[in-house]
Amino acid sequence: MKKQISRTIAFICSVLLSWFHLSGQGQLQLLPGTEKIYAVQNGIHRLVGTVSFVYQGNTMYCDSAHYNEKAKQVYAYGNVHIQKNGINLYADSVFYAEKQKYAKLWGHVKARDAAYKMSADSMDYDAKKGRAIFKSSGKIESTISDERITCERGYFYPSNGSFFFSGTVHYSKADLDVKTDTLQFAYEQQKLYFLGQTQMRNDSSQIYCQKGWYDVLNENGALYNHAEIYQKNQIIKGDTLMINTKLNDYEGRGSVYFKDIDQQLALLGQEAVFSDTKHLAYVTGHSLGFLKYKDDTLYVHADTLFLERDTLNKSKHLRADRNFRFLHPDLQGIGDSTLYSFDQQILKIGQSPILWSQNGELKSEEASVFFKDSTIDHIELNRKANVIFTLPTDSLFNQMSATTILALFDSSGTLSQVEATGQAWTIFYPTNEKKLNDTVVQFQREGLNRLFAEKLLVDLKSGEVVQITYFDQPDGIFFPMNKIDAKEKYIKGFKRNPGLRPKSAQEMRKDIN
Image (cartoon, rainbow, N blue to C red; front, side, top):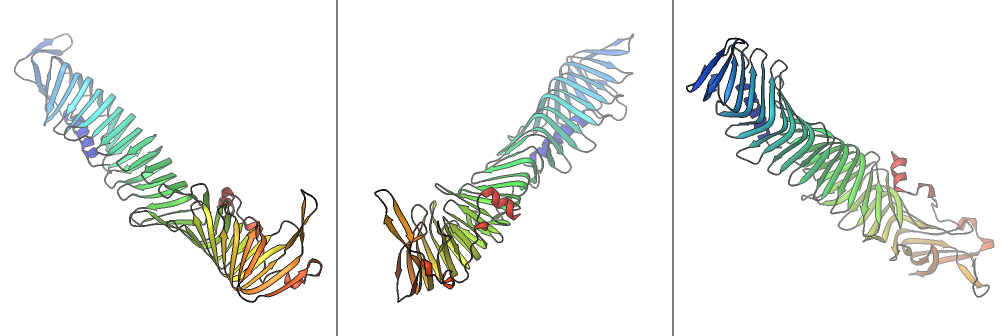
């Protein structure tokens, strides 16, 4: 909002209060060319001819007038024109009652000074009630700029400096456009109060709410009831939004929604801050973020999700510190101290993350997930890394552990190869195939195969080991199924966590908070 609206309101005040100064005794003074006819029966003077006179410091011109000297009432008819201190008022008819402290103008009411003009079908001023009213298609326009206010009704309360505009209120000035059902303006505080469905627009934003207030000097305020802000590269929604349109900073409360259109990222939560000056955004409380790829969506959750942006407010990183969870069609996971890079498409998870892919569970002290467009390209597991595949029968598990593990995915998002480096250890159950007839093939577990090596490359298909390549002399042992040593069945620290695996975006929001 601009300061010009306050000048508009000041103009209305001067029109209503200076024309009808309702204190003291007034005497009507005829100007040359006016003829007075006295009617004895009711004490009313009829003014005819070129009617012009001065009353209460106002110079009035009209086609004809009635003046009740005893009752202190003036009726003016036809082409009424009132002047005072550079302000001009026009109407078809005017009634002014000094004792009742009441004035009424009707019929093509217009007022103007050097900077503003106002029009309405009628206008009333009741000093006893402390209220001025203009009705039916009221309009206030600047004569030196494009500032404009239109409404169906307007109310002014001089005692507290408050104005009410109602009935399709429309304010416009330069790049700012405001439409609302009802608008209250607190003149002294320079605040607008929206009391109905409201739309605000400027060259960079479209703002909607059902209720709220706006400080026209400091360009900040609060929006309530389904508040929405639309900008070129972002959308912000919330039950309540605290806004600073000058700095482009916002705070949200209750069902907050933020979308970075350029990055196709959205954040949901119960509380949020979106700041261009601090180059960040964050949501907390039942938070959920989702990043839209070409074909898939990555969902993320944490106690708080932070969006770090550069000096141009382009999203650089999404950070989550506690209770992090994510969900992707090809991969799910949990962890803490998480950072996602938009430019590199890398998700880095610290503090003992756990990842799931199809029938595999991957763990380490740190993990980095590398995306390529809409699919998982590969995963790096660092320090105490291991992978466990649940086999479809026999409650058996193919397992690998090493200092570091590189998990490679094919174009369909399926884990296809594992490279284990540093004290690599693998336990797997090879199978043989027995063809029973032309259409039926029987698979049978041969036993347990355990290998130790410094580096192993394992090719996989649906979690089954297809081939193993070792790069130094391995230490291996094989046990037939009926002679498996119980001590050799599991890698060190073997533990499965299927109950922690995220299943849906809704479940992620409910379980943690």
